[in-house]
Image (cartoon, rainbow, N blue to C red):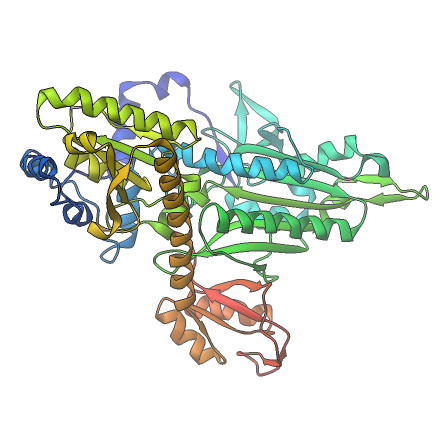
Length: 558
């Protein structure tokens, strides 16, 4: 069903009555818990080092001073995964709800994670020959109607602008951005422009990417994972041959796969979507599927081989080397802020966020500790020196030298924000020219090391090595979790049992689309993909008993 949106007058938007209605109808159901307080994390309490007297005294006073804030906690993951997820987003200051249903405001810390994703992918896109550009946010509705399967697939998610400047529009516009909008994706307007830019085989390949915000009229929303408006990049390419288009589609899903493994420490499974799950208007869709902490699947990125579907609908043609007119072969591929949600749900724990060092906005936080006034200057000078040493070698460092909060509160706060390493510096450390370093991914005393020299070459090497270890450790932990929750099945009965346990089922599949929809209806699971990595040997379809060429992975998903 298409949503036709009429825009209220600006005066009504800013009237007191409108503000009151907005607060009552939108804000109350979307309440986020207050920031996490010190004293909550059992990891922090266990990590207080008995070897250092000044830390013992500071910790005792911190526990007393922060006791008033103990009601501000994060719901345990095992108790309520969704509540835990929302608590982490709120307390780690990643995002907040916007005043329009289903929208969110991405806060600086959350946006910094998205910037880390952008920084990596931008380099890879340009290395593979793509250029950034931008398309308008308004699309004539007639463009959407040109490609039949495309409009059919996206109609439930479209919002239309029918009034502009107080007058009925001659043609409805599909909006990309802001309060009224929806651009589910940009294939239509891209093809309209490609038709004007492509004339000869010399104009090919044409390979572009845009960073933009789009809107989909989602009925059930979840911050980062599924929102009315979200940020993404979308690449679009045109080629002279189907082989070039297929190579491009596979190349870009490989870029996403490497990013997931090497930067986000998320062990995705790359593969091909079933016909039922293929992008509207595509011949083939390739995907990377990630297992979240609650064992649901998250489609973390896709790459589509569009064939000639859009080029035929829009008349996007070129003259080949033989002087013949041909339709171009196309691809499109995208990754979005949904990936931020994937990072939270893959690595986070009961203490909050846990970030892989390569995408962490802050890789090292330094917490100076002093008890007496005459100790403050020496401790702060040493902390500043350590911060400068690490920044000089390109590390992202935060020196928390504020005196409004206790060290215990700071320990908990930065743990909750997912900072990979914490450096503590007290008076005794200044005297010994050393620091104490704690790992976010290893709780308690096991993750704390004393007596690391402040000598630049030693400190730099130690910190870099620990960050590399954390990056590898998070990936290894996620792989172990994923593999222990994927079960091979050989019958539909086994598949249903595995899905009922909340796990992923992997088994041979050659059944019909109707049988696939039956699985979805009866179990709530869908085919996430046919993995690129396939087992050898003969296979028998788990549903029909007929020969099967490949195995599929079934799971419930976001």
